[in-house]
Image (cartoon, rainbow, N blue to C red; front, side):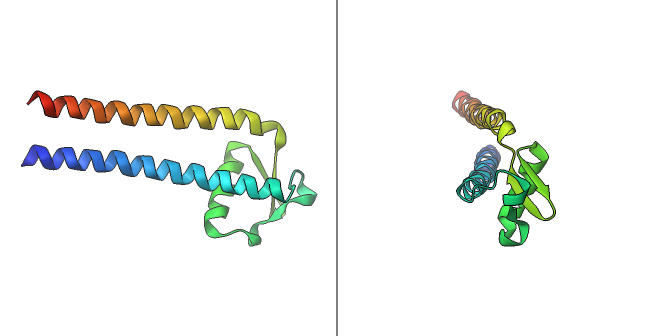
Amino acid sequence: MNRGLATAATLIVIALACLAVSRKLERERRLLRKLRAREALDPGDGLGLDELSADERYAAESLAAAGVLGIQQSRCHIRAGELATFRRKRLRLALSGALVALALACMLAVLILRR
């Protein structure tokens, strides 16, 4: 019974971690799409932070820390030069995270089947 509980807990933690990362990536993707639709490519055309929801503000802060968004005078805009590099890094992060989750799940399955 103990081993089954530990297995279930480990699988739940892996699933929750995958969900958290995918939600974060989706929020960032939606915010970037919204900014592109508004053509917010320079500080003058930026989108006001007060127009964003709490989730979008969190995503904006995360993207600003990554260097993709600029936030000036309570307005955010896309830094087009940084966007291509960021997309490649984000894709690598998503793929490597999925690979690690799959490897952990497989290792757990092997441990269960060996006993």
